[in-house]
Image (cartoon, rainbow, N blue to C red):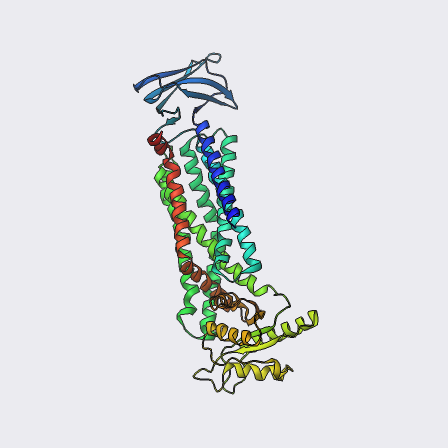
Length: 494
C-alpha cells in the first residue's frame, strides 16, 4: 500500500514538474499577433517608458492571414513599448501601419510577462491542470470499482463516483483547451483563455438545465404522491426542498451570464467576472454530479444480485396490519428473501437460514419478526431455519441484533439482508455502521418512494462528507483565482 501511495505521489509530482518546466520554457518568448495577409515591411519596437531595451523582436511569421511577432528577453526590467507594424502599399493603396501598446516585464530568469497578467505559458498551465485532474479521475474510478466489489455500502462510493465524473469533465476540458490554444491563432492571450473557460463552464451548466428541470419536476410530483399515500412528514418534503435549490441554482447560472454579458463580451474583458462565472458554474455542476451519483448508487445497489453463498438472510421489518399479518411492503421483502433462498439452493445446493428482524411497535399486536416468521412458515419454510430477532426499533438495531444471532449460531457467517429496493443502499450503510458486512437485495415498491430515497442519500452524503465537499469547492475556487494570478506570483518569486 505504501509503495502504491508513493508511486501515485511521484506521478503527481512528475506531471506538475513537467508542466512547470513547459511553462518556464514557453514563457521565455512572448507572441503578439496582428492581422495581415502579407509579411510586414518593417516591425519596430519603440521605447515608451521604463527600462529601455528589455526585449527585442526575434522573428516574424505570416500565415493564414495573421502575422506573429515573437519577442525575446534582453535584460530584466520593466518598460512600456509600442510595437509598430508597417505593411507595404498594395497597388494604389497607402502604406498601412499598426501600433500596439504593450507593458512588458522581464524577470531575472528571462521570463516575459505582458499587460500585467499575460505570458506564453498559460497554454501549458491548462495542460498541467488537465493532466492532473484526468489522473485524479482515473484513480478515483479505480477506487470506485474496488468499492463496488468490496465495500459498496459507503458514502465514499457516492463521492468517488461524483469526483470521477467531475475531475474527468474538467480534465478533458482543460486538455482540449490546451490543444485548441496550440492549434488556433485566436487563443493566444490570457484574457481570451479566461473568457473561454468561464463561457464553457457556464455552457455546460446551461446544457444540463433541461435535465435538472425534468428531475426537479419529478421530485415535486413524487413528493406530492408520497404525501398523499403516506401522510405528511418533514422527510417527505426533501424532494420539494431540493427542487427549489436546483431551480435557484439554474436561475443563477442563467441570470449571471445574461446580467454580465455587457461586460464579458466587450474587448476589455473583466477577469474578475470570468472568475466568478467559472466558480459558480463549476459548483453547480459539482452538486449536479453528486445528485446523479447518489441516484446511481441507490439504483445500482437495488439491482445487483449478491453471490449465492449466504448462511443467513436477514429480513428487515416494517409496519404490520392490526391482525398481525404483513402489509404489502413487508410482504414484498419476505417474498424477495424467499426467492433468493430458493435460487441459492437451486444454484449451489446451500441452504440458508432466515433472521426476521423487528420489534413490536406501540400500535402492533405482535413483534414484526413474529409476523414475518408466520408468513415464512405459511410459504413452506421449515421453522427450524427461522431465528426471529424481536428487540429492534430501528434499522441500525435490526442489523446489530441480527448480527448477534448470526455470529452466535455460526462464526464468520455470510449474510444478506432483504428490504425494499429504495432502502437497500441506506440499509447497507447502517449495516456497516453496526459492524456487519452484509450484501443487500431489494423488493419492488411504489415508484414515488424512489426520488425521496435518492435525495435522502444525497443529503446524507453532503452531511457525512462535508469536509471533502468543502475542500473540493475551495480547491476549484483556488484554481480559478490562482490561474489568473500566476504572472504576479512569477514576478514576485523570480
